[in-house]
Length: 259
Image (tube, rainbow, N blue to C red; front, top):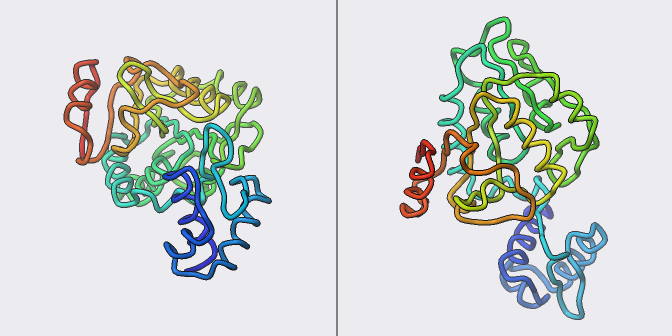
């Protein structure tokens, strides 16, 4: 197991359990206790966990894994969701993409769509996510608009008033949101308030809003609200979603697609 894969596994276990002992983690990952101690020390130095005597605990009250450690979570579901979202977008549209693992997969799905191989432009993509802009900028048929702002290391997203200035000057056909939580009562939400503010602006500038969220995000709450559920037009999720939750979203007026 590579170091990055081991770190991701450790962080996943830590998020799930809140606390890990060195011996427990070593047994789970089938590596030596000395290796786990080094991993814990290095992750603590990056402020991704808090070292304790004999183990580690989650860092902070609201914990968020950096994007590079979240890419393998529910990967097949996210790819199916992304393909379905990409199919909702028409050639020539102006599309806003927030940051996140699922929206990154949406960008990749758009990049391989046969009917988007040419055009002037085939699609205009507005994003505050550095990794999404990087993936699509090599596609000459896409017009890529990257907001300004300060880079947020956890999600590769640009946030702050510099991003606000760009978004206030544009109009979008559709905004595609990646969220950490979507609830009928509390709406769509993110961990970070500055990130949520940019996502909210994208929604306000769009004719319609699509939320791309795997079933683990549904019925949950998070710290920073992006928008009310009645702002969302379409929810695309996976077939593992609780039918009762999906009925609640449909009763709230959302079009729900499961893949």
